[in-house]
Structures are given as C-alpha cells and as structure tokens.
Length: 204
Image (cartoon, rainbow, N blue to C red; front, side, top):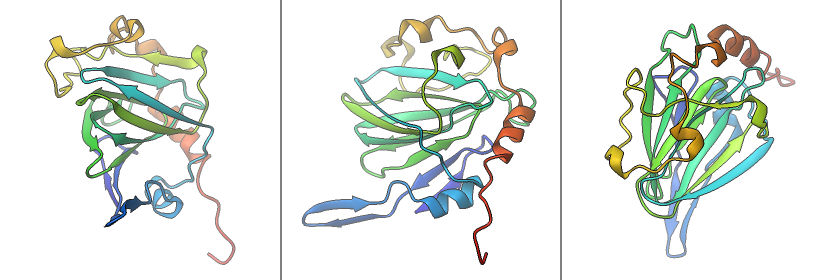
C-alpha cells in the first residue's frame, strides 16, 4: 500500500494494492506495520462504524475533546464520497486549513485522521457506504460539530450547496470562531499522541 501525507499534519491517505482475477478483487485495507510507520503509533480499535448515505448527504464536521479524542481510519467500500479533514487544533501551524480525498469503490483509498482533527464527507453517489475504525467509542458529552459552510473555512464539498442534506445537529453547528472555547489545542493533541507511541519491539 502507498501512504501519502495530507496537508493537515498527522492525517494521511492510504491507497491499497488490489489483486484482481476472475473471482473478483482482494485487498488489505488496513495493515499495522505501514500504519505505525506513518502515524508513529498503533491504532487501538475501540469501535467500528458504518454509514450508508444517499447522494448529497453531508456528514460533519465532527470532532471530539482531547484527551482522548477519537482518531479515525475511514474507507468508502461502495459508492463514492469526498472525504474532508479539517485542522481544528488551536495553535497548529495549519489551523483552519482542510484537505480532501476522493474515496470510492474503484481506487479504494482510506484516510486516517488523528485526534483533534475534524472529519466530514459528502456522498457523491446513492448508497455510498463508509466504514470507520475508531480509537475511542462514541461519547455524546465530548462530541462536537462545526458549521460545514463556515466561510472562514471555505470548504469545497464537491456538490452545489442546494443539493446537500445535513442532520439538524450539523445544520445548526457553530462557526469556527464561535467554537473556539471548545476546540482542542495543538499542544494537548501532541501531548496525547506522544503517549501512544509504539513501544520498542524486542530485538529492534
């Protein structure tokens, strides 16, 4: 698999090697060794999610309090989505910046989002299925959202705004400026991620 760092520090795109024959396709969509090489620590799996979305669905921008935050390893296994990562870590050199990856059932890319980074996507096709490996379980009291249409962020969602469908929570989420008091800090995220560093293996 190929790993490409995104413009948001700590986030990266993974393109797996696919093996196709007359039976279909096989691939490894997550692999520990290249993941640890890119992230600097293992991914602890606490919860796995799956969403099915019709074309035009916009989910996000979501983030969790740090510590412990909620890192995500995300893949679209059917359909297509424009996956967006947003740096919400106050003090980060790329605070307020975003990057996007086309995830679909052709290239089967995955995206990793570290703690403190906001996540969202737009479904570009009906019945788009997205699976998420999460480092922490869902905890309503520490989960938050940012207005996906905040002009300060200026995110290109890949579809006209009038075609997008949001949940009530996302449609009424605060702007980046209004949420400043609840955003994670770069220092807190860096300190927490440092505790996750992969231990030295015997003989290494």
